[in-house]
Image (cartoon, rainbow, N blue to C red; front, side, top):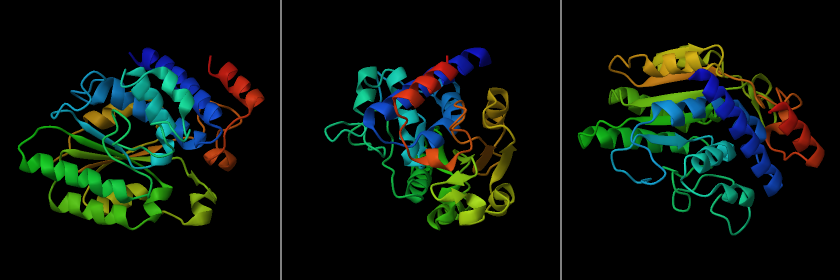
Length: 268
């Protein structure tokens, strides 16, 4: 199964970069760093999701709080049949439903709007608490960027999740170490994220390689132990394309024709 998922991740990386190229702007670095985590979710972990029934009330919920990585999410949703793949070429066009941040009112399969970093974490906590009160067994997954944790709102949301013992929510931190202005250490040091999450009452799992499917699925299957779960996944920004890997420039830049051609060659 893992070999098939690796090939799927390559295909989706190609789709993602082609969409960003067609749009003339976007965020390839964080889209590529999160790809294996997203693939593991949508092709294995999330239950009751379907492109033909996107609003199934019993579906697991996924929130991409690091909304600028939406090209990767859009590529997956198109591949899963939520909308035609041709739509990917309209990314960021003024009349497209695929904007630069996820919009649940416009795009099938998007469970929450994002854009202002940190806010969608609270939305996820509200969904998980609502599911508990409604007696629903659905699960909620929220993906954050590491730079996003320099905002204050996620930590308030983490406290609430721990206070209400929301063992139906999983926070996934895409810890690629870079953000728009440089490394996390240069901009605002985050310290030991795993220790911080434990201190905030999370059942915490740290993944050394956030691109290894076996490790990712093991983290997903680990018990919550009556607490919210946090997965801190160390990833490579721009993963899969040599000139994008660990390069701050590719946080938010579109490849030109020659750069796209090289990326497609590397991702065969």
